[in-house]
Image 1 (cartoon, rainbow, N blue to C red):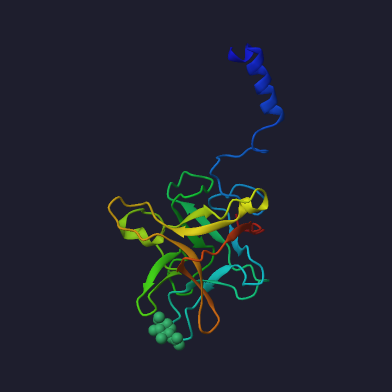
Image 2: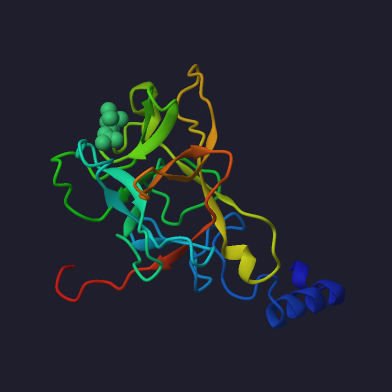
Length: 219
Ligand SMILES: *[C@@H]1O[C@H](CO)[C@@H](O)[C@H](O)[C@H]1NC(C)=O
């Protein structure tokens, strides 16, 4: 046995006493929630802004008074509202925790009254010359046809403690070998009417993920 060597035994002993990451961390590229727990695929999380006093959590909202569908991904205008919980569904459906920079579908855990999916996708608004994030996205089937529905999570900054759990949502899918992709960060466009719609901008919204309480009755 290797561990019979005194130095190795001592190192093993120290690693048991002082594990390098504090608690059992499944992967060093895991994404963490506001409690420092790894983000789990298929659990429900609110996506909340890091900055205070600039809107609340992410939700679904009509684009404006005349265009109801598809519902856009938007930020609640008031900080007290957490928005709607989402699920993160990794491209690799056997993956149980969400990791940095990996392709994901993001899906609101609610019914979409536009009778479309509640999954996120990117759509191009030619008049505004913007790319907005809306619902109605595809779920699964990674490839060219679903390329607009894959997002990923990156770390924001590199704080030591609490900042470790601050992230950015990114559009930079890696689901199709020969597709041309313009990568970008998801941020907020404040519309003329004051609503806060999400789209690709060079000013990323810094977010954190707060686990939603599981519902009492449903499984
Ligand atoms: C609402 O958005 C649609 C689609 O971009 C646009 O054509 C329309 O002019 C907008 N309406 C208002 C009231 O801004």
